[in-house]
Image (cartoon, rainbow over all chains, first blue to last red; front, side, top):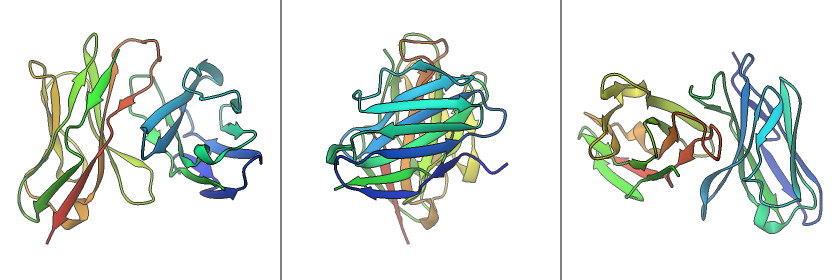
Length: 113
Length: 117
């Protein structure tokens, strides 16, 4: 298996622009998680899906953030409009069952200027 | 609420010496505990987990961790450190059942391990 795939790996954009991050989970994994990593706050859960349905989005910082999972093999995290404080590494992870190991993608390093 | 504490920001050890990276946890029930490693500019890689059974868990790359319920700890250990073990290590916990945050993991802030030749 290719593991969790994320794109792009790096994104540099200007404040106010829309940013879309993409994730392809491991095939057969029913749970998908979006995390954000910053120096100040460490790893934070933003949202997670079960069978393509958002279960908990309490970690989404603001209405500027939105996430979708249109099918079992694809999810997006969108920031519109982006701000410099959104600069972070965004990770996607998936697991087959909730109690099982979450496998992480390589992350998207976002820099908002 | 569930949480994890990694009390050391950095651990330095000489190659060949044993290493320990500390982790303590807090959950309302019985925990699932995980260790992940992150190399520079890479994603998190799973090392090992404790679900149930033996308190000593063996994982990848010669690492092991001991679950201690009375001390609510899950310290990561390796008998003989390698320079290539230098990385950022994260401990994570979640309750066995769904919590207010569902099935998400709570991560510690990470401990930077530096193994010197």
